[in-house]
Length: 427
Image (cartoon, rainbow, N blue to C red; front, side, top):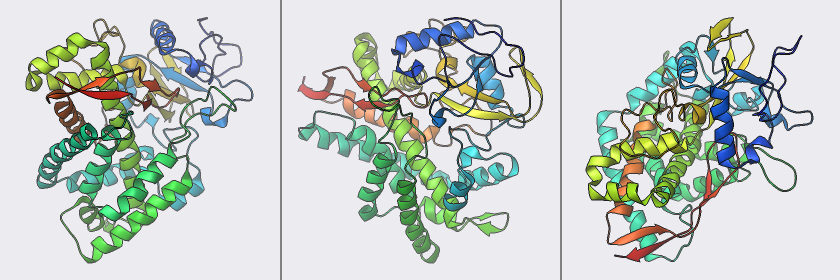
């Protein structure tokens, strides 16, 4: 990799070699990408990258890459300077899309974000969370029963995808007859995922498939109207009957939150589970250790799976005022990318960062964000789902076995698993 240098008159340095704004970089083998990030972490200051001429607009504009753990964490905890608005993904959501579908909480800042997050947090009552935890174990047990009795060869469409979907729908109070449609729309919204190796290069755009989002919001609006008339003990009832600055959540606000919860909650959790199973297959000594005393090691295993795989690779931020961080002075309007996947391999924080070690302690990974106001609201639920499914898969007589290498998707946004071939074997 050639180290970029600032060119006269350029706000963002020109780069050669490993250009994080080039789709070709994200088609490289994962080991090469990790090596490039390691080299970037050795530099004295964050490097800027510019999309090559003719690149898809999905790569957005030029940006600086924050790759060190300390820099990603600091930017995450300083939303006044590193703002989420107008959007944390590329391309940024269009104004008309925000007007039609509502603004996602991940793209909010300041009082707007604080009010929305407060009302959602308060709706997650202890009673609701306790019921959700019990439900997670029941759903995990049922799904593994079904998978073990069936003849499916790919694990991804079964338990990893269905567990978070069923849990979220149960938590929200979505009737059973709506769920097949919701599952279909989630799949449609994410079907064009990753940089394609053949044909026209295409990068995943969170929010692609607006027709699918519209259909999910129609379902949500129906449920919301019913819960306003007849509240029940579920999250939708709590949200539509709560107040934000004196007003109840609108259908658009609820729809935007529901879409975020589904797309983010289902995709990230299914990928974390799949990576976890694959990692335990690749490292049989770690699986043996976990199975030897599941309750003792599962918390550390869950954290190490998230750190090692980092389901969300990056989010963007927009600089609001001149500010110095990590040896670079940023100017208003600069775009920065927070690369969690790089921060979680920072040797300044993690000993032997490329190894998979379920006993790693401490493990201050940034897999759920770098802290601050945008720390993942669903982190607790995601951990519960991961631990419950791993318990069902690893402590039964019919043992889960991965029979071929997992098929990954080339993407600069999420570390997605397309397929995970498996079988169950009698012990």
